[in-house]
Amino acid sequence: MPIEDVAGAVKDLVDEGKVLRWGLSEMGPNTLRRAHAELPVSAVQNEYSMLWCGPEQGLLALCEELGIGFVPFRPLGYGFLTGAVDMVTSFAPGDFRASTSRMDPENRQANLALIDLLTSWAVRKNAAPGQIALAWLLAQGPSIVPIPGTTQMPHMLEIAGATALDFARDELAELSRDVAAIKVQGARMPPVVSAWSDVEAPPRA
Image 1 (cartoon, one colour):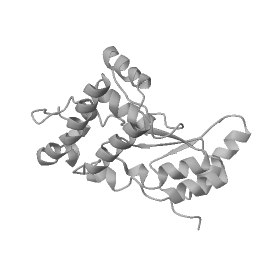
Image 2: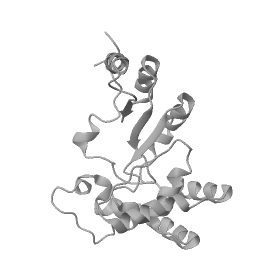
Image 3: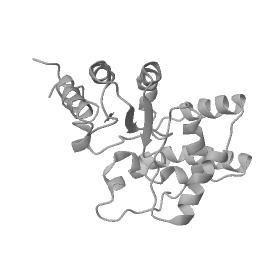
């Protein structure tokens, strides 16, 4: 369905007082521009973390240009960036991570370089690895609001503690440079999901 038609339907709901804000998820930049032109978009929700930096290829800049908030989901890579996953970790049946190739043994071994980096910074900043990963995300821009998930109170308190971490300008540049130097191996989604993700909405006929 053309995104203009979707935005138009939402606009009708806004006019009726039934909707205050609206957002998009996993869309391409062109779709976002077209949607925003029809009805200003409040927020975009896309995967973004040290494990997946795809939004840095233009989407973050576009959101900043248009004044759109950016909400990273999976900011801790389903727990990977907390250091909870290593080479002996096994996943339960149905666990999403088991179906992503970046968790295959040969790829996981390479991707653990991120954990080594986070662990070294955790020592340096007297923090937990996951807090470093979240604080780095928060430092990418004032409109970025990560949405980590947990079912355990200790993890929630640890997550909240990331907001107390600050990086000096040279520290942030150093950390970002080191993150960029690590080439994450494997796909972020199973093939069946990747087939529809990041696809531009068709234009109006």
